[in-house]
Amino acid sequence: MKIIIASSEEIAKSASRQYVELLKEKPNAVLGFATGSTPLPLYAELVSLCKEGKLSFKDVTTFNLDEYVGLEPTHDQSYRYFMNTNLFDLVDVDKSRTHVPSGIDTSDEALAQYDKDIALAGGLDMQLLGIGCNGHIGFNEPGTPLESLTHVVELTQNTREVNSRLFNDIGEVPTHAATMGIKTVMNARKIILIATGASKAQAMFDTIKGPVSSACPASVLQLHPDVTVYMDKDAAALL
Image 1 (tube, one colour):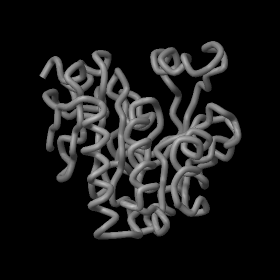
Image 2 (image 1 turned 120 degrees about the vertical axis):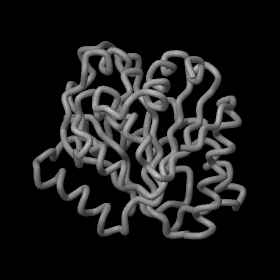
Image 3 (image 1 turned 90 degrees about the horizontal axis):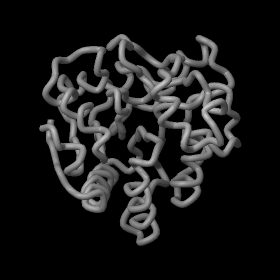
Image 4 (image 1 turned 180 degrees about the vertical axis):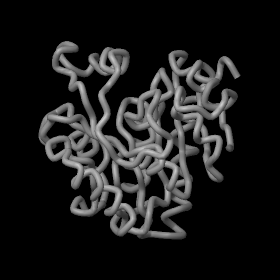
């Protein structure tokens, strides 16, 4: 596990270089993306690099971590909408090759197909992660089996409260989400984890220094052979 402590701006630039290097070596790479406020500086940097001609997504295939159950892709709080608005509409990616779990069809067949589609694409070359205050990655809340594949999870009250800032009130926040499983994430060849802010400090301590346990889902990253962790000073305060 490689650990880099830097400012949010420096994190975006450093992490973006991993994408430049990967896509130079493998223009048709399969990328796993995340949503939330944490990756926004990185996405802005990737957009800039693409516009400058230093990076191209034209042959890339993408798979997102998760989606709220019950939200149509056109809903302004859906993760499909987020990705289109903050990345896909702004770069040269073929949107037919961008994938986000369905928040509408959450049948066992549809969930299993998501993992099959990742495998058929050749597997994830690099997966981007954020982390929740309780150590969740994707929407894999504490207690999620480490061998889980794509599934539907009931969101904790804390997760819904944290995400309610993006809705009019907590009553609008979905109670469930479809998410890549922990094993799905761990199958990626490379993983980037970004954590910023003091609210993530305990989770990052548990992720890096704590035991590998479903109590802190992100702790499983200790077992992955190629993980780069980017943190600002606030997130790294307890290390």
